[in-house]
Image 1: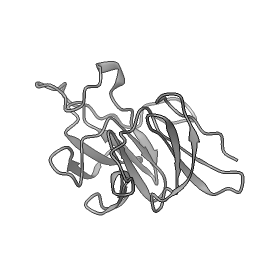
Image 2: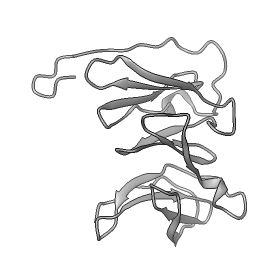
Image 3: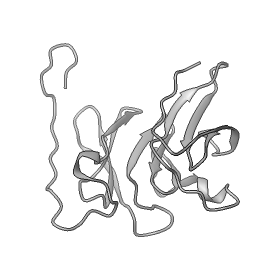
Length: 168
């Protein structure tokens, strides 16, 4: 959509799934597209494919299957920054924004025990301008370095929840 006049520049449509989606999201919780690095990232409605489209014309730059391997698990939602796409589900997987075959890190590889994500994650910055990825778990929020997935700290949490970060 053209922000100066509200006209539609391009539009992409997908068919509704003919089978059950891979994640147990109700229809109103299907993931929203995210925009980063002049790309629009989208999980198709049947939740089987991650698509990267040009923000300029909607053409497909790449697509990849989700949920068929540990490398690219099913995802409930997405986040993205200038370098990475984050698949958010029971685990968090950071992918190279230009090559989804290149997994940068997985949260499960960094945790000692299995501790599934319990809500929506958030990207932001700390008071020094350093990027953070906040991840709600059952009883705490992990603050991660988005580039490496390394834990930078944690905060107590009564139960899982959807997070929002204010920069700084």
